[in-house]
Length: 165
Image (cartoon, rainbow, N blue to C red; front, side):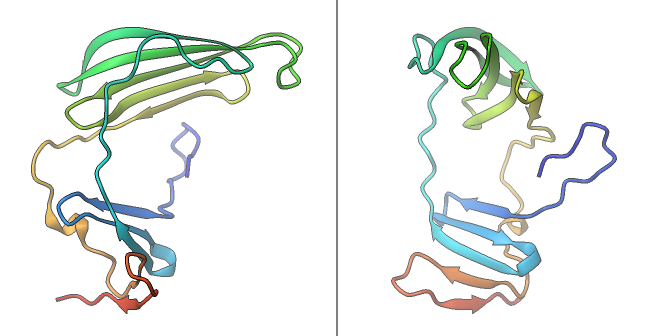
């Protein structure tokens, strides 16, 4: 859940997703309810952000290549999308300018930074921080102790409680 920038509130954990590309399992857990579902996982085939003409809906969109930038010593490629929502498209009496900027890491296969500036919602910044390159601690792939597991890979839902070894 998103919280205001004033840092007066903590963002509560409502869901945990554990993607394991080695075992090809995706666990989606709701800690408050101690329930996890498991499904088959295949790592997505990430591609660098596209630069060029975009599909036009309710206005115009321009995509700009921002080049390369290092974020936390990790190389990223940038892209800025600028969209104009035409007058009257969504009840607006004048054109609305919406900007989105992404800094994508090919090494990690995700955006390390993204910013959205939209007059309807204000400015929103998202950043990935505390990045550690290397083999993850196996404990991060452990399910909460006592969680009921619903295996969606099987034809029938079989709930199994998780116990510690």
